[in-house]
Length: 312
Image 1 (spheres, rainbow, N blue to C red):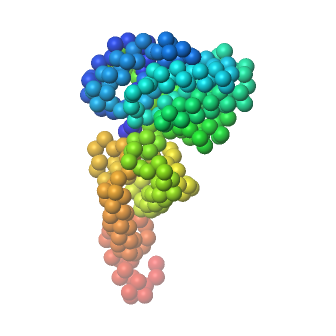
Image 2 (image 1 turned 60 degrees about the vertical axis):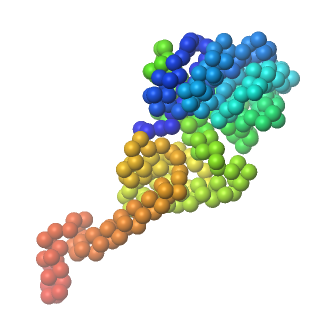
Image 3 (image 1 turned 90 degrees about the vertical axis):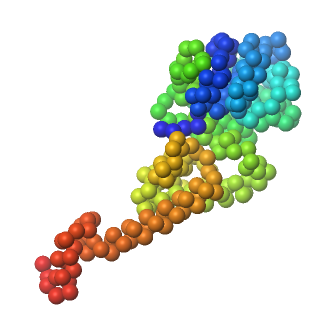
């Protein structure tokens, strides 16, 4: 399955050869910037990873591991994170990593408010922000629905598919990647806006309208047998079904190494393929006189009998 993949790393991966990572076709990485409430808790490899990954041409995001036990503590963690990120640019969000066992007793309301305080504080400095957690945390310790309306969602679930709608899905911690020692976390990026920064973030209606149009076209492709995934419903959101249908459509168009990116060329090419296939299907159905799903000499016989008024 062709996906837009993204590694995430920390000091535990040691020294990374980012040129080798890039040569494998990996374009995105999320780096651990640090943890806790002190600037001194910066990840030991963050500066080197940032410099070398940027130099190799990767697009980056970061995450900050939390130990916060209160909303005020979350703000201190945000300020420490901002100090570490100062004068650095990122293509992906700054994610707040909530998963520490010391926090589970705080309850869903407090933990959700902790996440909001960190994200809002970092966002106020101009960064895109999000929340990272595993499926158990999003289901039981955080108000997933409330957070999803406000921030990017990065889900950790080592499974065959992501069972919550998310922007980024971490699906393994044991991927083998050239340039990185040992197993490494690997992710799939679903959100098209993360991959296509030229989409106007201040014009959600336009982006949604484009998504709905693509979904409608993909449903036409399904009706003609071009793709196997039926996009339901048309909901103006780029979700798992839409992404799956996009990959199938690109494969049908002969695109090598297809990804989820939607371009005007893709829309035009798919519309053409739908029209050509529809005409071919109609022509075949018109020639399939005996309606057995095949066009052969038996249809000529059936047509002769029809003209002669002979019944079987």
